[in-house]
Image (cartoon, rainbow, N blue to C red; front, side, top):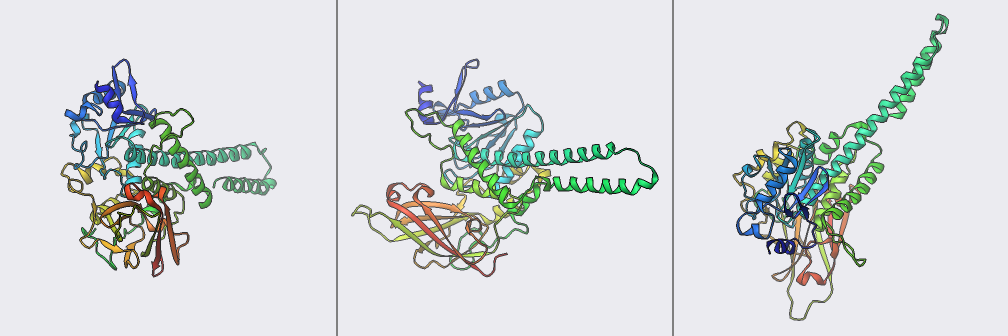
Length: 451
């Protein structure tokens, strides 16, 4: 009976059965070293989610002590509060709210932690989970795979450079011994070989209206820190690299969906593994961050106008359209950004930042100010172009949809103005009245010259 209930709760997600251990879990292997699962529950929740004891037994029997768990649930959410001792201390907590995009600094930090752990031994596996083991877990699993792709490019580029050097040495060694009067010719040949080789290588706690939203600016930007961590031998042209990482992301998202979701029949399309538009948008941001010359200028941006287009809702539903703005705590973001690119401390940062005190995740992690409602016709809101922001839309008191985005990644050029168009499928949770939405335009313009 409990197995039936667990399958019902899992819905369209795939499950893993181990006949020898006699366990069936809401768990999949994305690849042999990367596991995604629903959170390990106890008590009543263990009757319809992964039973904590079964998860521990499964991981220990299959992987011994060579597994590490990443938990993305806040303490305020069920599943967030279990002790690290459950998995013998091998747990990292990186909490953020369900159904939301994470702080963008999480992407490189968590991806680097996973990569550092796996690099320690070929036997090691990484286990990531949130509550359902789908959106947040899938976002970070895909971020890790993107980083691995970028580093694989580096390895291949370095291998090409080494092979070129070896071929040059072989050519030089093959030159016959010459008399003194031919030494100049030998030097010229060696110089030409060397040239050929070179050619081959290549919140505040409160959001306030008007002019001061999001003024935290890290000394070095996230994008440049991430790009600088990719060795030069891995880099080609910006356009080629960006296309490569974007193409890779599509493949990675498809891989995650094929592993995490049940196969479909009757020609139906499988539901996406990472289905929340803002989470997918952030993965596209990260793919661009991994390019050699990230195109995300800094500065301040004014959100000058928001336009909603929607089909007429039912007659009984009426009210003015308003929007609220929110972001993650400025102090938390500033703390996280100081650690981006600190590869020597990967694996310890999450524990040091979050620990068990719950400073950042016992309550709401997404902060809204007291004066949070702005009319859509004339909001005078200025934000840090490289800080995440959530715009949440209402009709009267009724929720329509929300979207997370980072302005600097949305501008098509580092000057002037830009309109971010979000069709309904690119908005998060356009349910209820939100189903009447057609699209939303967010008009932005630079305040002063971007940097």
